[in-house]
Length: 481
Image (cartoon, rainbow, N blue to C red; front, side, top):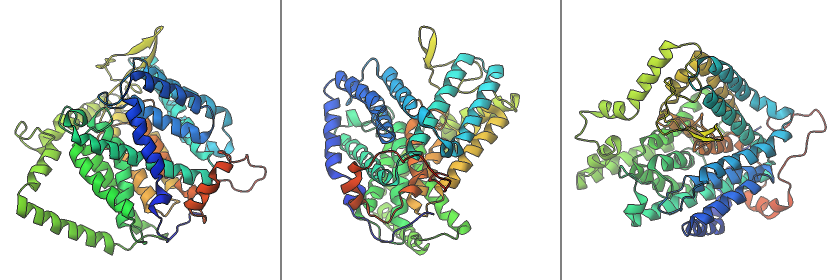
């Protein structure tokens, strides 16, 4: 049963300031030489072999390094290969530890993957690449879910704190890059911060934005200063990034959890709707006053919505078509051509890869694709059967997330899904999509970290605890069941 505390958590219980300072220094060290990044990725490979907690931390650090802003984090020639070796190490560490309680989480992922592999053998124009993508999906998601499921509740609470700290470090250092626009801004003028493009930064910060906004507006206890400042800063950074995907994901996460209250009787720790309504009214008044005094609000909104193409397109519909809508319509047409089984997992129907295919001894190890709208992307690749099985995965993960009445984690989970409306990363855990799965799983297992001992006490004893729960020795219900 999920538990909720009405006590107001202190900032030091949610974030580690010494760790954040160390994180900023870490980013500075990565800017010295590409050799530093290679050493870090090599360390992540070793780290991923240690324990479930280290698996999660290694995947997070390795992905941030591999997708770092090349003007800050010096890229190395072998970063892509090293990132996949980190994922391989995580898989090798977690697969042998799978137990019965894990299968209750994994079976829909495995069913989806097996069906996609079988149908791709018949429909894919690049069977070897489809098999690579399926293997990457089933192994990557299995490693992440099993790792989280094996972390003790006390360790999970500390891991939440670690992940929030990492998020704040990325957010803070990305904001600092505004001091040097030539480094911090991407090609379209959007903020990319310490990551390699604005969309990557948006994918990373949208779940944290939803978490902070939900904590500010929707929890019964008073909002913490950390949540308020996170919410404000992240809204500003999302606008500066011009990542419409991030704005939609964060907003979608908050709106869905507010709407879900109508269908739930478990509202412990949740505020009435009066607070968000009042805040929204005050925000509208403030924005109206800002628009009246400066006249700049419409320009900010248009720049965000059009991403600098205003004047080059006739309306917002055309801007959407040029960005994501055109691709979604093509995917829908491809689905209609092969409605049952689709055109092959992780490929384009014509078998062409604009970004190329990386092969080692003839074996494909990387074949990037860019698909922006998850619903039509899965229909194009897996047909109606793949779409149904993907909905099954989402439904079961959703059900587990809703065990926690803390709306912050629900909002983070939904935001992780929401960003796939504009950037289809859910099906790509071997690349930047691993961010999506790490944060989604953190939110999904958050109910296990709800405990009577406050984090500040757990922090004092956490190092004395093993990372993994002991294997069950009786038939009592286990966590994750």
